[in-house]
Image (tube, rainbow, N blue to C red; front, side, top):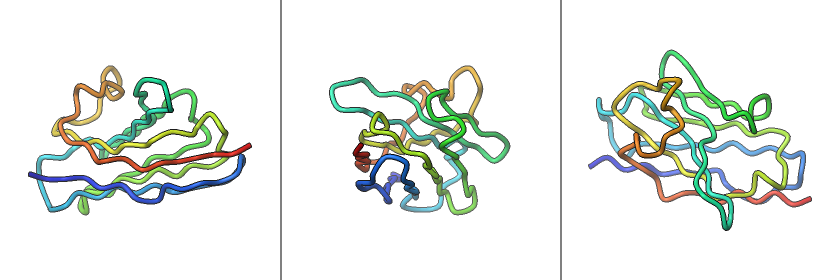
Amino acid sequence: QVQLEESGGGSVQAGGSLRLSCAASEYTDDIDCMAWFRTPSGKGREAVAAADPWTTYHADSVRGRFTVSIDRKKKRVYLEMNGLKPEDTAMYFCAARENYCYSDNWDDPARFHTWGPGTQVTVSS
């Protein structure tokens, strides 16, 4: 079974930048949409961004600051995070699914069948 692994998390000051990466453990044709979700401490999971080869989606809270991109051939997804704020502090998870991303369900975690273990992002004020 394909596994996902995130990297690039860490601690930064407000206004700083980080780049998260997520890679599949092996080549597979069963991944079309890859996404990032996050879980702030004490809160529920929320969608951050998603990408397939033709489109990208970003949550309102990160649009203009974060940029998601995908390398479909390598089964990798990236999240470039700029202008980080303390409220961006969370565990960030990579997720993948077989169907392409769609505007009405890209942000539904139940639609994703494979998840990474997560990487912590901490933004200090």
